[in-house]
Structures are given as C-alpha cells and as structure tokens.
Length: 80
Image 1 (cartoon, rainbow, N blue to C red):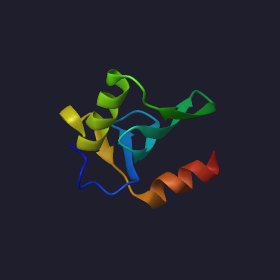
Image 2 (image 1 turned 90 degrees about the vertical axis):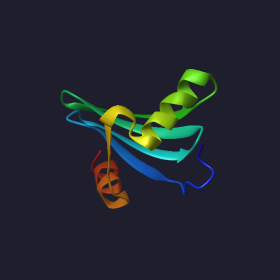
Image 3 (image 1 turned 180 degrees about the vertical axis):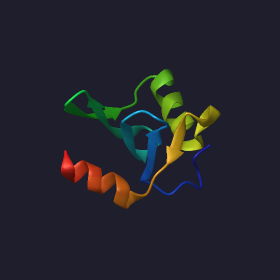
Image 4 (image 1 turned 120 degrees about the vertical axis):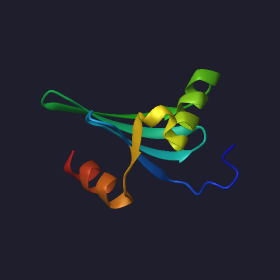
C-alpha cells in the first residue's frame, strides 16, 4: 500500500495538539502536548493494529489527520 510513498511524511491530528513524523510504514515519532507538558514517543509498529494506524495516518483516513510540512513539524520539535 505504501510502495510509492516517500518517507518521512508529516501529519497532525485535526484540532488536537498531536503531531507525527512517519519515518516508514512501520515507525513514527509522536509529539503530544498535554497541558503544559510535551511528550515525545518513538513507535516501532510490531502488531497489526499499530501498522494499520500508520496506514491510516498516511492516507488521512476519515479526515482525522491533516498533512503538515516538514518545516512545521521540525519547528515544533525544536521548540519542545
């Protein structure tokens, strides 16, 4: 499904302060703002639901995510 995809890709949940850098069809980095704290998590997908989650992000499935630029993500990542 991701044969023609060039990684990394960048996504953000719509209307929620959670940003993603998708490094491959099996790994991503999540930056999540929770109150005044920011959590950064690196995920290596090993099971089907995790891999499906990545596919959903890539495709912006059901409009849950929006595409963002590398610059937008990197600016945020440097800030936190």
